[in-house]
Length: 319
Image (tube, rainbow, N blue to C red; front, top):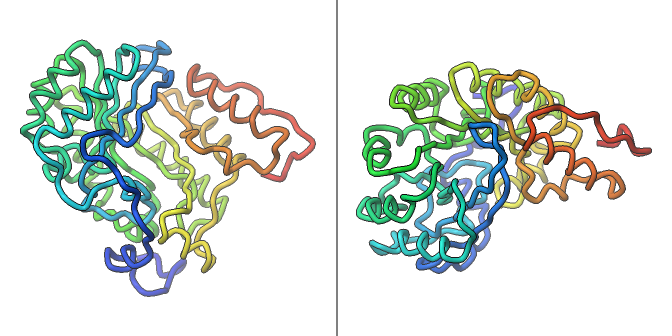
């Protein structure tokens, strides 16, 4: 445990739940969001990727930094509901070759995605090339192979690595070790299923410099064991628990400069695709003059995987 950085009462499910506010009302018959955005694919092409954010029961792993519970239900959705959500979403969006099914938890959690829906989901996605789902590493087993065998498209699984910082990982309440992550990654690789890893930039209990260094080490680790794609996510407040840690001096959001540094580093490795998560990136702007241009640079690096010169601004040094 990271006693050198944190000595308050233990962070566990009970503490995290006690910090929460109200969740949003979601319709179990409709996804809570859908997007279509360009992304660089494993083939090096830039193609549109649809993301369908499924409404389902909350994840049983209550990670310290997670805010996805805000758009979940408290009970298991009816059989057929998830497949119906996907069918509805596909009918609202232009045809795409790649689809992300993100369900605010783990696709292989039967309380979130009923297995009885899998055949219908596979049929609905028959015409696409890639299906990306997310899962906790400890739920990676024969279920993944069963779903993969149903699919005509190629399956990819996104796993939350978060950080390889040995002092911080236990406090994230993820109930996962690096051995668990590596086991899951190698299991998927052995069955020709690619993985992508989510890496946090500046977790709680890290300074700005530590945040950069541990994010870089996390990229080294993930790409080194065969992860094909890494997504660097600047850690945010807003879920209750993170706000309490912020108020008590145990968390600060990272700067945009740190995100630029980590993305540049990851791409420079040339070991796999590395993306910066740009959702709500405006909250990290310290300068309204250069912020949009810096966002555009990050977006271009995501698509090209080539590092371009940094944006110059009179605010240099402010983050």
